[in-house]
Image 1: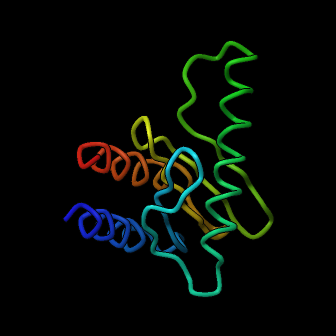
Image 2: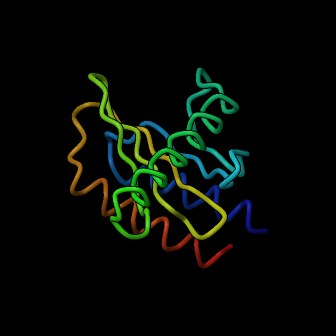
Amino acid sequence: MKVNQINELLTNLNGSDPHIEGSALISSDGLMIESVLSARLDEDKISAMSAALLSLGERAVEELEKGTPEQVTVKGDKGYIILTSAGKEAVLIVLTDSSAKLGLTYLYVKNTAKEIKTLL
């Protein structure tokens, strides 16, 4: 079943970097598909906020004529939120702590998004 495979990919992503705190796959309209997140986090809020961030990022890329949107990163003083396209209908969201090495994290996220695209 694809949900089990997606869960396995998210679990592997979380384990690939000690600074990754959680990950989830949401539909482009903001519905949670699968997640491996801390129990203290509200999946509904995460999926809704992710959809809003992605929408804003897409609009900015289009308005500023920067091509096709691929990724949105938000930096806070306690970490990063990374949203990456995982196909036409899904978005991979990754939460990290503030010590994350973004180059490596982006590589892990990109590879996982690519694998997810093949499943969807």
